[in-house]
Length: 309
Image 1 (cartoon, rainbow, N blue to C red):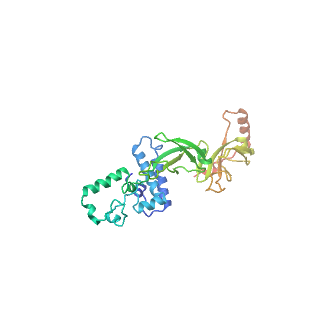
Image 2: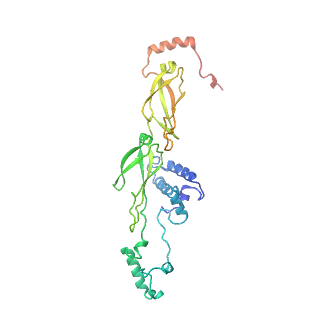
Image 3: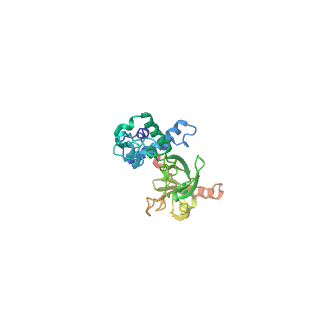
């Protein structure tokens, strides 16, 4: 990536860390390849946004980028050096000479010696070529339950390498996991780069996450709605039993406290919210129809009376 990361994310250089994070998440949701199948432009912009967030979303890298120490790809910017950098070097330094500037008498020999040593990693050349390896970026999908509970998964990278990935509990969609030293190898003995894994959480057939809360729609039978009773409710920790009160309507909501996602590293958790939906039997029931026909003749009521305009 060569574009300015602030420009890519659409934020000012003075933007707060929170504003940068919000801008990245907004772009990631708009441009994710799963939402734009076959759109190469969206895919490239998605990768650009990831790379930009890797720089300015990391406090240390952002500070170094702002100081000009690294470029938009996270690579070290070469330091401009001149002869005076070595004026006080020891006698064993390649730029030292007892004759002062006399070692510049044959410029061909100087440049030949300098670049030859750099290629060989010898004194005076290799030491200036030590560079950290580039970070590599990947995307990875995890199941909703893995994101909720945490898990360990072995993933295969595009280059064929297999890496062990720890999925932390309460992981959020779009979160970036860093695998230290699993990126490109360093140069001249420099450290390896990191592997940055942007994780996308798959939708679940029952659960939906909002913040640290979990939402689920629970079907209940007609007699459970009228008479109340105990029902089994699925949660991310496994099924639990709860009581449905008498005379429950579709759309009524119940709450299971502390059955949501973990909040931080403590014991605090979000809640699970249950929306109830009354469901009639799948097959027509003549006995039920006859009873309701008789009941309606004596107890008719209009639930839509407040909808008149």
